[in-house]
Length: 187
Image (cartoon, rainbow, N blue to C red; front, side):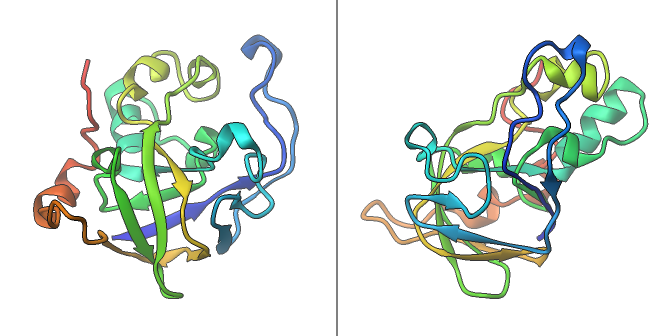
């Protein structure tokens, strides 16, 4: 498993009507991001906002983005256009909904809480390709609460789960990389 891309932006790019095109905003693709518990990603538009405490960071599987482009018969999409904070490879991201997870990219584990789907918006048909919005449903990633502070970096990623009273998850099934492109709901 690995983190292949990180995306941070202080502003929203998809405002107004898609026919007007995205706003020109400063978006960076750093090699690492700093996360603060209860706050979010330092420097990101969702950081410190009460409405986004349970959705301060989004993760999407690169395989899901690639599968949608292939199904539409178009060239691969630039993951930056989805504006998800973390793009992974080899991780069945959609299965992390409702789960606390520890991500470690080399600087120690960071605790995140998988909360809800990162639903795609109608802008996806305008910035990716017609039909992308519908095909991304159930595959556009998961929104996470930042429950622990730390750093995530581009590169190798290990994933584990905190012990709970109910026992451990079956990590072999939960983290099946072959399911990364499938998502949670197919049309």
